[in-house]
Image (cartoon, rainbow, N blue to C red):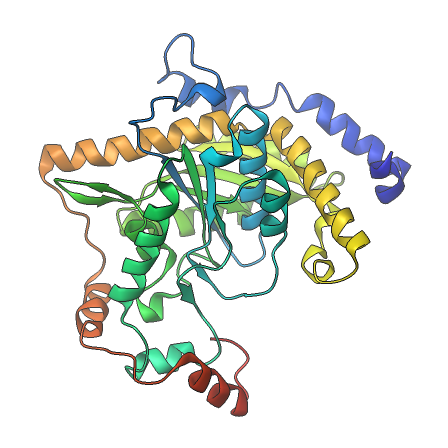
Length: 370
């Protein structure tokens, strides 16, 4: 097979063994969510059949840059598509980004007929953006967040699930009042009584055990501090053999989550063929074809290792819980005083210099990023 030729027969055998053993490994974690479900839960593609029900919104965040957030988004979309969702019922958006290069998920969505795909949203951290913002030369954080929310609202029309891709680690963008928690709050569904309901967050964690859990808790706390619910995590790019193998890490991490109120929804091995996809997207057609084939391979394995049904149900349930809590205590989630101060001061900011000028000036001075 292509997988054997790529990874070598010995690694392929290890991969095959992991695949065979994956089906029974999520029982302890899944039980926590299933206890809250009906005795006979509906199939994945029937989770949201009522056209009057608002789309399930899910925010995918990471504990660091390049942990595989967009790959997880692709895996989620692929599983939903394969389970019976129509391409027209799904949507993807990355409201804030540091990278404007071609992305695999955009190419993949196009081939699968998912037209509601926005890989570059309203908030772009281009070179010079941060300093220009602090100088009052860009749109305010309020305006940027408003546009992000409106972009998600537009995409969500007529959809059953919309996947919202985060940027970097949770605090990225905090200097401009547009960190991941603020974006998740701004992109939530509208509630007539209580305003927007924050989008539930799925964290993408790293390989390992101690560092993986410590990082998860650190980043989950950041969202919780801003009253944004975190439903749990998937752990990505785990080795398929050795001391830090997927099987070894999975066993240890699940023991931790058995005592947690959130869920480890799955564990994903590293796929070498996806490692340099970004560099290949702009090259020869054959390389792009290879990258798309690797994406399909990833979706196939993702479905075996990640319980997408539980993720969607947990996201819907978390949104409902926040709404009910606000109704019960008339609670309006607040961010830190510092964040509110930034938003308040930013209201008076009006763009005075274009992006072209800001970026050209920053480049001339040696800026590497936003």
